[in-house]
Length: 278
Ligand code: GLN
Image (cartoon, rainbow, N blue to C red):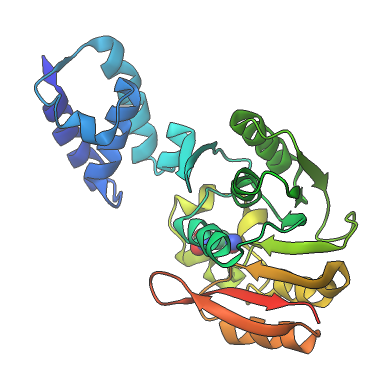
């Protein structure tokens, strides 16, 4: 007979051996998922025996995690700013930095903008969180990937958001401005960093991660094109990679945007460029 605690201990050792970071938390999440409880509730259930109907699927999950399949793909769900979202290999797994970007916008923007664009929306976490926050805004989600848009649409349905538009578009090519707020988490990982990424990150679609040798290819295109899609007084907000702050700010200024700043993330890294139209 295996108890919850014994199962967590054994699974933790298994994951540690396979190089999984935060092995215990990962194992707790897998067990909690199968027991349909929270990680905290597990602490009250340590002595509970687990029967084969729980252990068998758990072994499958554990094997996958040991093969370095991301925890989020196994759980199928991530919690992002106040809501749960579906996540799978169709789009980038939502990251905590991006949650910070949403929080920053909600704090800074006290009057809901009229027309909002989440460009390169992926699973839709940014645009849908904003749509939930600003019920009167017209929110548009665009992505070059039909797969990502399908996932974003499933997420909109799950959140009961039916006033959101979805557009398949390579950056701005199929879009019609002007927008009062354009927010984007473009792919920004430098191609040259590919070999340094963890096996988990490589489960994200390459299309959602990489953007040329220095990671700035799409940011350059965005900076060039965004001005024409921004309403007077409109604002842009971006997420960028480590060490891309100065160059991104320079690109935005060079293309006529004003009040360019780069806000830091919780780790003190210049992460979120903000700017306004002229
Ligand atoms: N933050 C992600 C990572 O480091 C990259 C996301 C992106 O390119 N927008 O893997």
